[in-house]
Length: 266
Image (cartoon, rainbow, N blue to C red; front, side, top):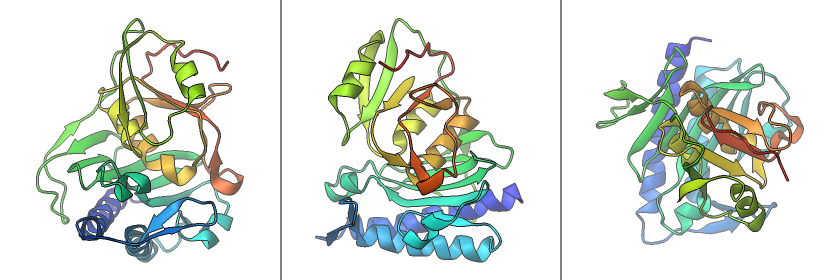
């Protein structure tokens, strides 16, 4: 894979999809439908998916593509592939809370190695560069070229005073019980894949997810966190979270800075 080209294409498509999403987000109203798994989907999800998938297929025709909104793509099985969640955090979008993201990732041999996470309503862009390191881009987000960036790196956590990030829309008692095993300084909440990015920038130390997610929900954020020195492991045995699983469904997992002393599953 030409990583320079991959980074440029993923970034450009994420920005273009973000423009489409914000056009709908800023409208007076928009339709919300319910998919077969009872999750919501909007015109913004569908428009962003169409734009990104067409762009990736044109740029990388020989690379398998898995995208949330195209069920036929879920039947593919490969160790190396592109994977897209065109609008992660649809509930945040519907309720106009801003914490939604465009997610595009490249998985190699079961591990996400390159990714882009773009939060258009927050004006935050996180991406892996061609060499695999992660940065946050600032500036005007010119689609033709990467602007000013800062290298991001996970925290050196104090295990007696951890910063924990949890989901806004999927918080539950088992999650609170697990978090209760740690010495927590403070907690914050965020929607979508921004939780991975908060750990990647050192704004948080730990994100446990004890709920259903799919690989397209996590791959881009996982790639960004990897490139910042962080880790994502299974909740049950703390083995690395892998990709290309049958059905693309994730087990429970923990995203964390490497210095966090992980607690065992209850």
